[in-house]
Length: 162
Image 1 (cartoon, helix red, strand yellow):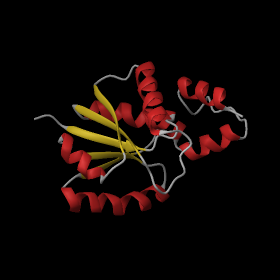
Image 2: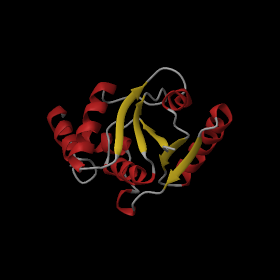
Image 3: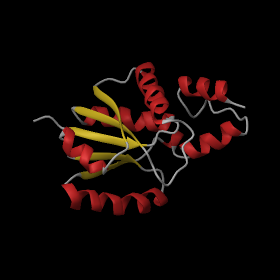
Image 4: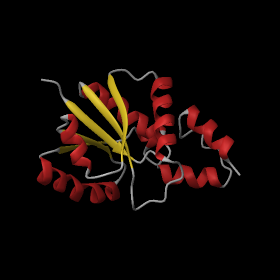
């Protein structure tokens, strides 16, 4: 039986912490769907199509192996996507107790709605302080984000800077 998992996120933009979680999840599951989702609670910097493109390039350039599929989802529940592709597990990276508090009710709801379990992966300590929102702030103020994001993202943000 093939184990299928989904790593959802806004990936706005994708960070090295995201790639770390994706790489480790790809070693655990036979098939991994990395799903760019719309988060209605956040104002996006990048359109979903650009996030998918940057994520695809970053995964390719990082040489991540395994059956990794990249898609986007903006309509309906996340668990609907999981059911559609046969995934029984969501993989979430958590950096702190704040993330645990935010993710736990959603994990319980996803299990209740569709029997989809959530697995939490702790970050590599080198990336534990990095978030997409922090990267967006640093980039917007002209700071160097290259230590925190894949090269393709750093180049894109540099070209897009005002």
